[in-house]
Length: 346
Figure 1 (cartoon, rainbow, N blue to C red):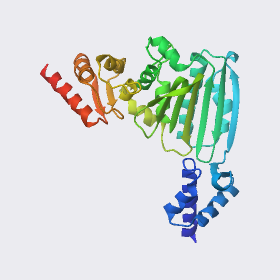
Figure 2 (cartoon, rainbow, N blue to C red):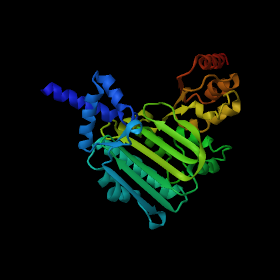
Figure 3 (cartoon, helix red, strand yellow):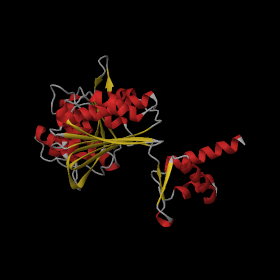
């Protein structure tokens, strides 16, 4: 009897874990995974619906399932009301997130307060909208502002030629338009703590997923006024904020000394990375770090001039920086090795 009950719990847990990505075919997926009939799966689905952790929507061919929200909440804040992010967290967010493991609450506390503070101090907007949704598995929080837009603001501050270039700079870390009052670490570390982290602003859509090394960028077809930051985290993740900090910091002062640079953010559209100017775009501000890892995921080839600028010229002039590379395709690796061999000859 105990083994039957345990198997039933495993089946229902499988359904809940997979329903978000398979809202229409979670039944077939479960039947295949456990070698049982659809009728048997339906009994478990009915039980989850009765327990109010699963919702059924549509009928016949359009039938699909959703996790039942345990909490849905939204509020509009006026920035002119002298908002303080810690007060908003204590009064509005923490009580609605509810009882979660301490490590999960630590991540939410850090991520929410950093993003809300950015909206207060950097957006140049008038209002901030916060939306929260919690299910049995995941909590999601969105922070919207009606300001100038984060990528446009960075573009202007750094005199960048393209709004998309802002994403590359943001992904490196240590980027702020107000260096006197901010370190520029909030977005970098927040984006690496959550399961899903997205910024939508202007014509640019930036996303980072925890199980993927690289950040990625898409052009948004519709203009988005202001900035939207979307964060999602599993309610029972074992991840800790300290783990993320430790991955990029070192020394007695716990300095932010390491970064991973997603190389493909240096290319726009279908262009190839072949020129020294593109390399310099990639290399901007990385002299602020002691360890730099260039992630070539999604880059099929690079030109000789690009490789030479990064791995010979820059390396020769910054021999105090440890420069590493990962996920390089054969053609990319060949160009890197060629540049490195020339640096040894120099």
